[in-house]
Image (cartoon, rainbow, N blue to C red; front, top):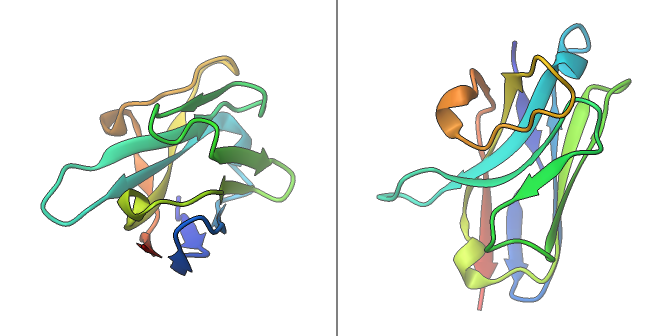
Length: 126
């Protein structure tokens, strides 16, 4: 399953960006969709995830209240709306999918995700 992430770029602190991720229509609604980010030299960290049904979400404490994850199952897309961006949000952002047996399952550990997009760079200038 290939995932493609879009929407990264350069933005000033306090600004907004919206990342999108396109997946396979055949399997999209069987998977939790997650966003992770990584700064060179640091470990990849969890950002947000959304369950199969679109009503269960999880967020890292560092982005709660600023980021919103969503999904559109018929279109096989997921999105991460990022508001009030801070310089510490600068990273490469990856979308990923993890098979979920039930709609209420929302994985947050990167090792549970089997499919990853290519990453998109988000740079927040202060």
